[in-house]
Image 1 (spheres, helix red, strand yellow):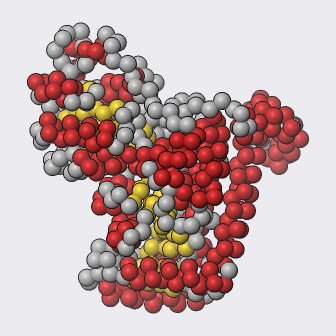
Image 2: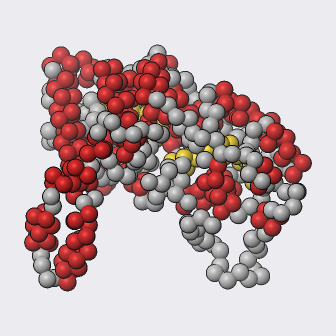
Image 3: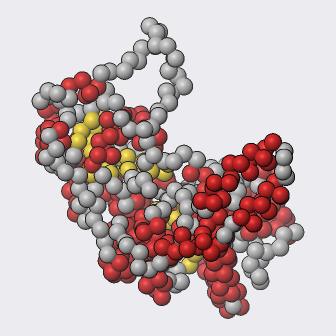
Length: 129
Length: 397
């Protein structure tokens, strides 16, 4: 029996651009995942709480506004604090290459920037969950 | 590459041309070999091992849920939802141990056509109950979400405030799969939430088909959310749903719409006159409310409490719960026999031939059923499935 993978697609921060998150959500659904989309402008607390209640395997965040150095690590910390040590956390969006090492240091497993084929994200999740 | 397909959005031309400005970038695939780029080098050289999912024991589940630990509860629900037969056996044992701690919550079902405002009512109503010191669990029964294998659940977007309250637990679940289907999973999820100390369970369902009957058979109080314009809407709403409801709630009774809502209420009241009440001794009425302004919601809660007091006194409340247990058992038998039959290798082997014969018009469907059922060996099929219910089956999540 194939494993059921649940993914929370989340939009932290204040920018209102979720086309990318929706495309990713759809691609993940087409790949057979169960996708929970939080909607726009979520606080890190809301995202961590949703991840807990939905018992997801993956939290995938998208940001355009540039708030990622602040918000991504905050979500990681909150998720881990709530006891979800085994949840894979990935990020995406308009993120400068120079910021990526620090994000990975903070516990983001992988960062997907514009132009990433959605299949890469699917493969990454399948390989790491 | 993974085995999945994606379809192009409708606005993308089949053949890319100059007029269409979008182009597909090479992406990170092209730079995998270099040290720059965003692929984690530890992944490429295999240093980063995928984390194994935490395995909780039966005791972990039971103790965690009883303590009201939200993460354990959420993992326990995943266990229940799993279609893996080993998880099924484990979930059943966990549930068995939690069963003495269930049954104390008030179970409320909410149905209505899409857009009637069910989620908004739950958001407002749930917040009100949390403020009053209750602990609220929100579940949903949605049989339509199994069209594709995956699903996108969007309830969180509409219950923003409630979803981050510590007193509330929201878990809209995708349906589908085997081993009892949606009805079993929702019931058992409900019991888990009760064991975790949630004292009001709100179960939401779209009222367009079978699901509202399923929900009616698992809740104490059932309400139908409608909008104004009753005369026209009634064409679309099956009378059957009104027969199931203990209350009809007219939402969006605010601003300019208030007058129309009052008219609609009168019309619904007239309709109800001719319908047998869903609960013995409880007259169904129409109520006004506005999830937006919270008008009418405290009154609605009073109605529900009056309902509970009245039916408890008359014994209808307890009687209904007992009947629900029996109907649950019956539907489980249906499901189980169904899966025994359709998973049977003998039947599966014969099925294509019989189907062909029916399609060709050689035998009638009735005759085909007779033939297949005669071939079906229940004892043998039951032996094959024995591990499903067998307590000693190897269990790992």
